[in-house]
Image: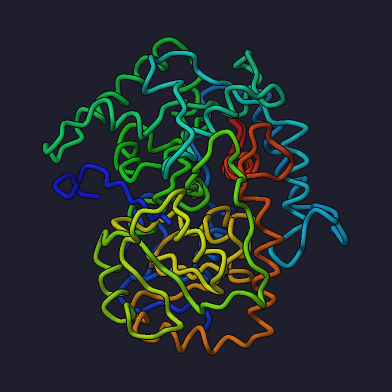
Length: 442
């Protein structure tokens, strides 16, 4: 995002066919040197990801460490994973390669150690918040800092180093209302990196390539691209056109947590046969796309429940009711490519319809999004109903069943459980580090 386009964050009370690409003169992804078409389809993203895992390598370490060899060994184990046949916890059809995922996850559990820097003052660092549309970064911070299995106090044993700052708290603490500038936010992160690199040798060993951050605010990509560009960045705003680097960066699920004490409250929805609405969307008119959606579909068709911002109701009951009783939930981008509606749809067992060109869906390293979601190009909004009606009922039922199978990967728990969203975020970071790591002797 260009500096002059920065806005104070808006609070949205209602966060709530094969994909093709436009063939135009490709632009250059300056971070990875992979040419990217004007609109990158999911199938093309998968190809870019495979290419990056085959070719992308991070910074060569300045001195050797045993952890480098452990990562190289893990990569070999994953690439030669034994075939998984019938794992009751992993429904094979929703994964890119269930065998590689299972072996990678096992190795993460057996091997991974994370060092968390203690430097930095609250509220920007070490101060998680657990509700609202930016809650993903807060929940991850809370659970990572409390973790006993993966966290180590010995940085020499660490495969990864966590930079525990909150992009939302950074904005709240330092952004000057109406300034349209975030130079002071960038400077704060620069000073933080200077502090840890002066006090510890680990950043300097790899230039930060074995360090990671987790940021859900829209501004996180631009705030971290200068001084944290070599880091693994887990970002909600995962945009191919805004410097997202396949094989290094991670798409962070944006989760709207309404109840921090019980984050799975209201989980689920009506059975497929009792979902009476074809499609549903409600939300504020952020960005250019949502007004186009409403222009074509608001009050145009009784099957298409397309609204602006719904009137307030206790516990957002109206919004949740529509999510639970619709077949397809429209996930249209706002100011940026990401939307909490993607995870909300999965939470309420509604098939997500993603309308956001160049958005990299979460856990793309692992999940086959075309097996359980519908992805529509922005230019096809006028044909939205016909596209949805063209999906046979049998296929819809399969999509909805698979939503239930993938759902456990998108749920927060106060005490993390195997394969939940906390572990999936950590796994994506681990997976990208494994496939980008090199040793000093390579």
